[in-house]
Image 1 (spheres, rainbow, N blue to C red):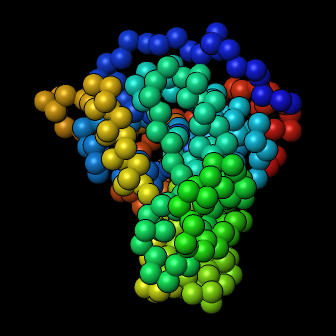
Image 2 (cartoon, helix red, strand yellow):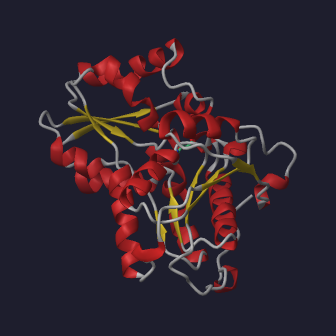
Length: 295
Ligand code: DGL
């Protein structure tokens, strides 16, 4: 089904903004927790609402309209929960739908994209690998990044089939994951790459296993800290930073369209956050069909 035509009447009305309101962070699943980790480090006083669409992950296996439909529905839901700004902590959702969501939501947005620019700046061999979802790699937005920054650097683009599913089940280092990663990374090493762009927010959770395989032959480019800094700039521009005197940081609130058990486990083991995950239903046009759960 084609996306609904846009009109200004589709836009949610602007709400009065309070600096004390939380920042919304959204991902198809658990990958955005790597961005949440950086946001908490950079902006420890900001309250955070984290929404994972785990019932419908991975997005990288979905069609473009489905991804736009879910991204918009979750963005609108976070606005209704009182979010003052939204981080779309998913390369795939950003690549497919950031323009649509920006047009429809009344709050500032920060998206994420693979670190092609820093990789092109830092690679000495001028060969760099990119691991991202198939949807991200074939998107016009990603192709535009390559055109802009990759003139004198060769990028070897590899879809990370199976990796998002592994992180979603909290598997960051099994023999199966190791074999998948080995198959993706060895050809990059053979081609002389010295840099690897982690072009999906799930992949930073695989960094130890990647390190085991490649040692220090590849410099890993993870943009989560840059995203947190961009959020800081955006909040400053809009006068939305929580007042410093508002006290100690509050624990993030976690929501999931799935059962949340893996989110709880990953938050505890990798982020040392003891979280309760609230299960929520976020309806959207495409998920009202009976087969919408199947990837
Ligand atoms: N974390 C998402 C990203 O950065 C994963 C996409 C998916 O669900 O396939 O692209």
